[in-house]
Length: 132
Image 1 (cartoon, helix red, strand yellow):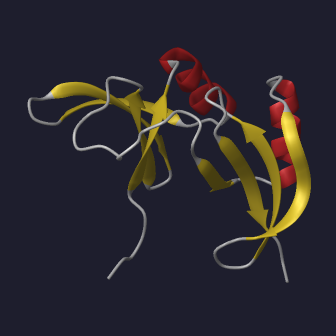
Image 2: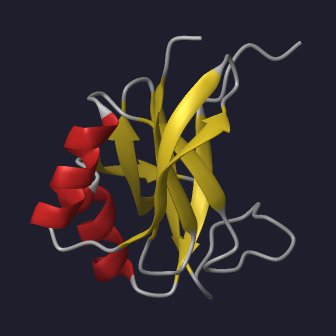
């Protein structure tokens, strides 16, 4: 029935800090679009064939999660470069790693991961698949 994930929604308490993290630190592209009924301006972070729609705490779009809460997400992203380069990029952007590199299990095999927190304290895992 399900083929792949199209998008997910993050709720933020600080829109500008969130935009900075996902665009400047992680390199996603900010997209501004019109959606909903009535049509309103919305924001999303685009990467590959997916996106993260952004909701502002207290100003969420309907329908929404039952309890949208900043800091409740735990997300894993697959990097487009070796994990050593991810670590160097995080250091260059002065973003603190909280763990890693460590070995984990991804959706299709073993991954090497580092962990950071976004401005809302969501847990962000950045990984690279490794040969078995």
